[in-house]
Amino acid sequence: MSTEPARESRPTARTRAGAPAPAVPLPGTGAVLEARPARLRVRYVRLFGGHVSLITVLLLAAAEAWAGPLGARSAVIALALAAGVAAMGLYQRNFREGWLGAATRAAAGLGLGALGLGLVYYAVPALEIGRGILAIALGLSLPATLALRAVYFGLLDERALCRRVLVVGAGERAATLKRLRRRADRRGFEIVAYVSVGGENRIGADAPVLPHDRPLARIVRRYGIDEVVVAVDERRGGGLPIHELLDCRLGGVQVLDLATFFERETGRIKLETLSPSWLVFEDGFRQGWLRARAKRAFDVAVSLALLALASPLMLLAALAIRLDSPGPVLFRQVRVGQHGRPFELLKFRSMRADAEADGRPRWASRDDPRITRVGRLLRKARIDELPQLVNVLRGEMSFVGPRPERPEFVRELAARIPYYNERHRVKPGITGWAQICYGYTDSERDAREKLEYDLYYVKNYSLLFDLYVILRTVEVVLWGRGAH
View 1 (tube, helix red, strand yellow):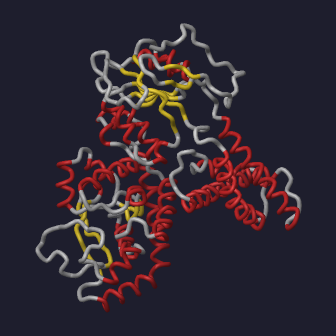
View 2 (cartoon, rainbow, N blue to C red):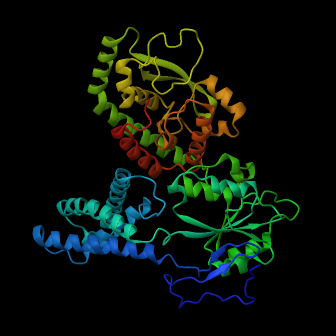
C-alpha cells in the first residue's frame, strides 16, 4: 500500500503555475493524485488586460484615420466596454452558449459599457467623445471581443482555468456531482477528491476517495485546492467537521454548500440538494418594493414598444388563423399567476377549436396532431405568444418570468414536486430563464427539471438578468429551439 510522505511541502510564491506537478499516491488505493499549489486567477486578469489593450489599439487606429487623435480617452472607452463584457460573464470558462449566444452576451455587455460611459461623461465632461467615434468603438469591439475570447480559450489547456475542488462527503449527496451530464456544467471545475466523512462511500471505485484521517486544511494545502464543497449526508451528531471547514475558510479557501455550488455551475437549483434552511438563509429571493416597481416600469416600456412594432404582424397572424381553420382568433385559458391567483391568458389560437372537446386538459406534445398548419408556424416563430403583451400591460404577467401553467397541472405537480409553488413568488412571464434553457414541458419529469431553472430565476432575478433573457430569447426564436 502506498503512503504519503510525513512532511508536506507548502506552496511558495516562486512555484510556477504551469510547472509539472508531482504525483501523489492516494492512500489505500492504486490511484494517483496530482499535487499542485493554489493558483491566483491571473489568466482572467490577462484576458481582461488583453481585451482593454486590443480595443485601445483599434480605437487609436480608427480615430487616427477618421476622427483625429483620442489619446487617453481611448483607454477610458476600452476599460468601460471591457468591464461591461466581463459583467455579462463572457470571460467565464464554463460558458454554455454557442457563437450566437456569445455574440448576444457580448452585445449586451458592450451596451452596458456604453451606458457606463454615459455616466463617466456626465461626471467628467472633458472625457466625452462624439457619437460617431463611439459608434465606431462599439462596431469594432464586438468582433474583437469574440475573436479574442475564441483565440484565448482555444490556446489554453482545458484544465488551465478549472477550479480545483475538494468535496467533503462521499455519500448520496456527493454522488450527485458525478451525474452532471452536460460538459459545459463540468467545464469550470475539476473534482480532485472526495473526503469520506463518517465512513460513507457511494461514489464508486472510479473516483478518488480520501479517508478523513487528517485536518481538511492539510488536504487543501497538499493538493492545491481552490474550493471546498460540503456534501455530507448526515450533518447532525458531529457529522459535519465545522471547525475544520472554518480553518479552510479563514485560510483563504472558498467553502460552499452543495446547493450553492450546483446553482453557480449549472444555472439552476437542484431539488435533490435543497433544504428549507438553505432557502431561508441563502442570499437572494429579494422581493423589495423598489425592485418590483422597476420591473413593472421595464415590463410596460418593453410591451408598449413591442406592440407598436408587432401590430402589423399580429394583424396578418389573425387573418391567417381566420382563413386556415374555423374558430376564434384568440385563445383564452385560465392560468395560475403570482401568489397562486388565476388569470385569463391570451394567445393566438394555434390548435383546432375542438382540441379539448372532452374537457380533459392535456400537455402539448411534440408534433401534436391538434396543432393547425398556421398554428405550427406561429408556434415555431413564437408569434402565438404576442397577445400576452396585453396580459403584461394589465399587470397579470411580466415580460420575463416562469411560464404560467393551468390550475389542473399546478395542483397535480405541486402535490408531487417539492417547492413547486415557490415559482409563483413572482409574476409569470412571456419568456423566461427556464424557457430558453429547457424549452417546453410535456411530462412531470420535464416540469421538475424546468422548476429548477424557475427557482434559479426567482432567486436571482434583476433587470440586467431580464435583459439577458430577452436577448437570449431572440436567439431561440431565430433558431427555432424549444418550439413545438
